[in-house]
Length: 460
Image (cartoon, rainbow, N blue to C red; front, top):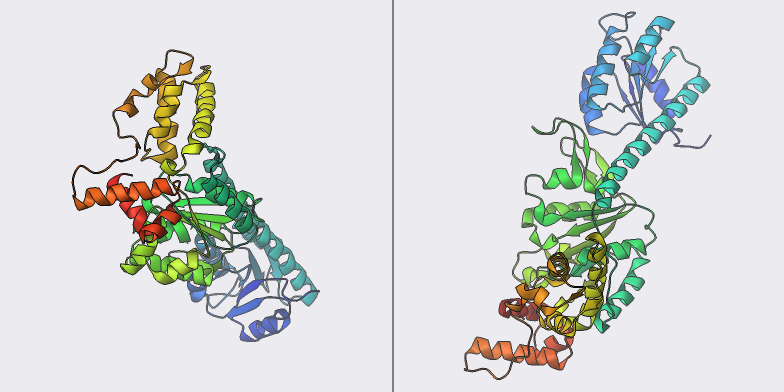
């Protein structure tokens, strides 16, 4: 028989000789054996540890035959952990008591003195039952997450520009590793699609992908959402709940808008990432987790480190590989591809047939600055399709864009206002470098993050 096949065992009995003998017998088969003679410590032990099997004596000090105390403590264990695997032991067992024990939630029933082979066989069977409970529970949680994801609509990553080809190359290289990835880019650029593409091409592709919008989680719910909680840990904790880290075990965890976390929450997240284990609220049980971490933000996190609003050690932890996703205004070549894709998607959705876009419509789409990026383009085309009368989308169908600023090249400024001069210079250098932000930043003597902030400031 292989060692440590029984996992963690807890034995509660008021006979110290029996406890010692059981521990000596089982320690070569179990990962860990804990013995306890005082049943009043049961709530503390069960609340703060994960036991695979609990061996519980039925009779303690009050009497030696009724089993009343054993049933009381069995009920206590089940209230704390409904999936606990408990084997009751007694020197005065009979069929009636065994049947009652099973009805009360016990897994099995053995008599003292036991035969060693019989005890080990019973524990082995119980340990396997516990493994099946855990597997079913984890599968159920993952199924709920998958059903939630299935309700969301995701499109393939579309792009043929030089910037997107470079990103595809990075994805191909990083996906096969377990390196942590940080995706930077404005809202609406498709950061979650990139994260999913990494997962779908990784060795974890058959496991779950769990996405969390960190910007939508309040300070008070952060630990509960990410690390989970035990029933009764706080007012609304009516059931045990696994956090997103547990649900994502063996798969990929995507933390979106990570730049929005406060410093205290950053510290809590860093601790979990360093230890690779979580502790649910209301317990001291450390639960190991095996995840591939992908994070994203639209915030200039490198500048935030310099400003002491983002932890440098956390940044080192999450960005083994960094991907910058350019805004749509720097991907003019991709706009026709994206527009045609959304035309097909929403044409089918609303049962309308379109031949395509007029020249004027496509020129407008390519000249517009798209502050909302791909998401704005998607909604603009959906709106145009709903309202259009003809079989071809024209610039008039995008009247709601024509009143907004377009990305025309800026000529010489009409004044020597410093902001106007800086805006004009930045635009010219970006145009000169074909929209390549890295090259433009280098020529301007700026970091990419600093240039990115100026682009937002001037609406470029």
